Length: 202
Image 1 (cartoon, helix red, strand yellow):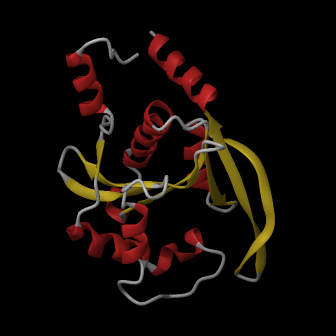
Image 2 (cartoon, helix red, strand yellow):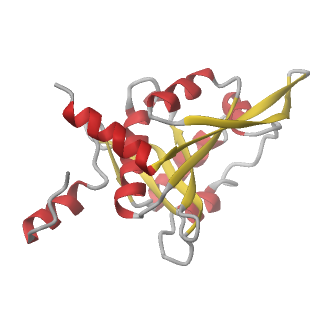
């Protein structure tokens, strides 16, 4: 549990709030945009992102990343670049979007560069963002959607504490077949219980 009973405790809390074991979340920089856009446009990932594969021009995702990452208080959305601590390299981007203060709920989205996948950076970034969501933003629920055929993501989100709420049935048509969109979420009390269990574990 963070100690905010002193000046030093408050400084320590703020300094570590967006820092994980492997990654750090920081504000979006203009220099991040070309790489993030290139990752977003990768043709081999299109079926993991959308209900229909439609190639788009280079640079078309730039304004979306800017919007997600404005962090200016005009909306409740927040977004951050993901940086690998060991190398200080840009690894991806995470956002909490669609947030509304009256229901204290938001949707999580993450993208990682191909060279930064399968190394634990994604789960660490999600863990940091969940801590920020529940400990700092005061959210009650964080949700996400993932395609039913994205087995790696489904397994990773379950390990992170997300529970399947339901499915939007047969809303994507790929390779001549209809596919479901899985809705998952984690609630604040579930997240706190998992964190306490991990702290208490020998």
